[in-house]
Length: 119
Image (cartoon, rainbow, N blue to C red):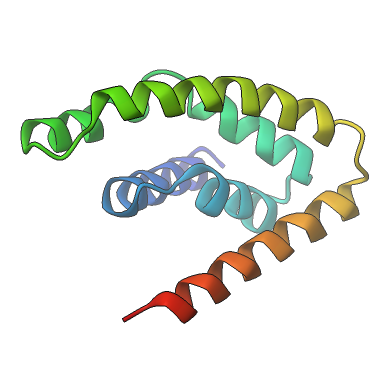
């Protein structure tokens, strides 16, 4: 199990460094589909893993090459702080099946939008 979790983290880290994704699009589905976690536990585990240290080396690499807007990052982080709290409170009251289906719809909508605007 530890090896599987390390692989999930490694995969999410690589994709985070490449595309800025990791938690919601990689870790949560992997925990649900590979590890068998309930959606609510997968989401909580992902948020726990993403606390402070995760993005620092990737962000440093982007900053070093002039591709990081620190001001925008801090403003977004403020929104993430408040938004994650509201989202977590809302999720606690949802049935696991409802949460799983909502997440699936979200992923499909993102994929459709990405497909349509691709040039």
